[in-house]
Length: 277
Image 1: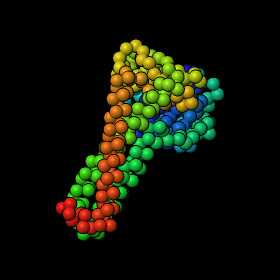
Image 2: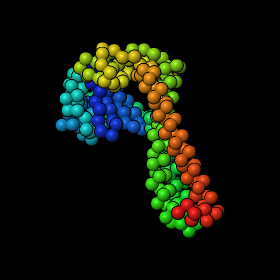
Image 3: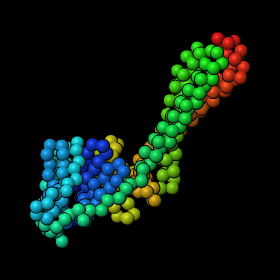
Image 4: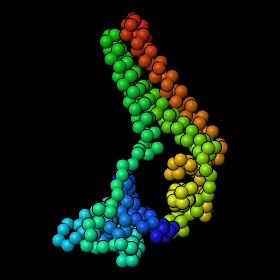
């Protein structure tokens, strides 16, 4: 059994998803993935926006379940009807067996987006820590009013540095994938406007979302990590993002460096701060 464009991917809350892949269900959460063979599934139930996968179990024992909350009720019902209809013909399925023995789980590495956001978070936290240190130095130098200048301006500069770093990271990723990735076309799913499917070198069908329109869009993906995909933009937008990232990043870096240097000089020579005020 293979994925078809008409088979929806059940998207739940907290970035959980459930989809049919070959002869198994793939349940993904941010940090783990469970592969549930159809032979281990008793049935799929839908109650409102909750989709529950019940596993087979011997008589008299408690059935183990996997649950996704916050899903689309329409997508969940379509998914459940399709899978439940296919279950009776699944090879090797025994409704009296312990389905948990067939389920395989594995931890997932952090996604590219999560790693990027964590780096930016740590960069911002480091900049904020230096701002606090600068305020302490100014206060020790005998001019606590200097903190009223350092902290508001420093927060604006920190935000500028974070936004600039994010823009540069996005620009570099797109630049690298366009030049060193694999370029192909993704076809739109008629029943899901905005959802496009493409096939990676291993034959796995992957999806990407965009509102660009059209029956197909050009995508570029990483041959080592086919899930790392971008939709190439026109050169003007890419250059604009690069210019914005450089401007904000350098502004934030230069401003924070100057602020910290001023605080250190003021700590070593308190009279310079007094003169400034």
